[in-house]
Image: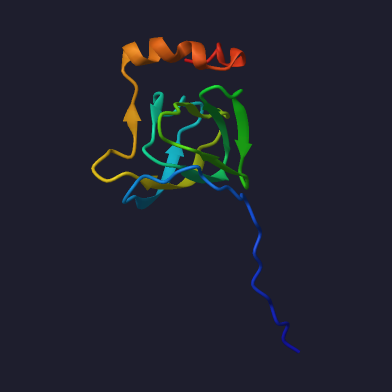
Length: 135
């Protein structure tokens, strides 16, 4: 007798963003961070970002929040806008960290804007006190 399998839905995250950019488009991307790498420099996104770690372990820091570890199988999000994404580093030095993100992007605005050196210095005080050892 053949077993009948059912489709399974597992809720990973449930968030209602405060805003979406007017006329937003959506982008899905795979981000791959080499072992021990610090990831992209501090940046911001024009709209919310939703992510899911598929492999490895991500060290994640948003402005004002304590850095935290997100492991394979866990989801995360960030609201975008003026909030700075300080850190998306590979927390492990022995494996790649890979994660999928879905981003809402404002029209004619790059999906990722890096902070200038002056802006990094001016916003440094907004970081969580436990983030002082990173970049």
